[in-house]
Image 1 (cartoon, rainbow, N blue to C red):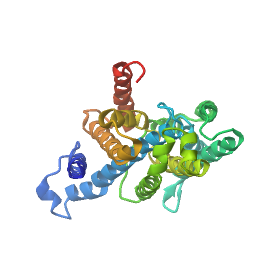
Image 2: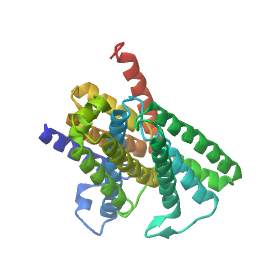
Image 3: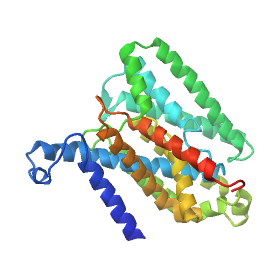
Image 4: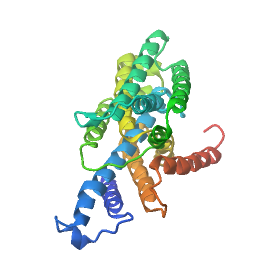
Length: 321
């Protein structure tokens, strides 16, 4: 099975890197001075890596939040992390913060600060609730999302045409990148989240049954929940600040993987990550090859496909399953 996954992922990466509106010949790719070689190494390959890792982070974070909160509809976006990052990025655009620090634009940095502040607020509220995984914490996240949406509408009202366009494009999600500097934080985030999840996979298996059962088996429930929550949230915050909110992956991919594999959570961690990466690769490839005047943002493609898939999952699932 591992060999099959390896070849499927490799084929997906190669296919996505070679396909696009500009045709790349294999002969030209062997010449480092050719334009095709520059397009492949500086545009297509970084974008492919960014798409695969971003999809993996979103899918795995969805699986973990659904497990931690024992709610099949929970994702990091549900808790307002995406909305916080979007509001932060929009604030940088509206108030004219241009330029960059350490190679990252102020839009990206403000987006991350928005996500980070949301994580800190949810963590603060979690301390005030009787249990960390209480459904009321989800309601807090939803309330924050509505608050951020209201503030974002105010910024829209304050903005001019160009600023509104920039905010709108950010909210649609984009994987446009040149070079490898932008994907370094995503590579680090994906590595950290995978290592942390694999470290706590046995605890997650017990937590998927109930917090009480995990506690009786010797799991420090609060420490595990808070550690994973912070790591996942910060990883998603970094991701959203760089590529914008890309919806539905964290919602539908865990459902698809668990429906197909029908195994406990520790068996579906890596398949969920890989499937999420391949799904976003597919959506990004579709966005790049559609015969449109300008490239369609990948967030539109994921929402369109993800919405149909999720409705199908709901309709096909038996009552009580």
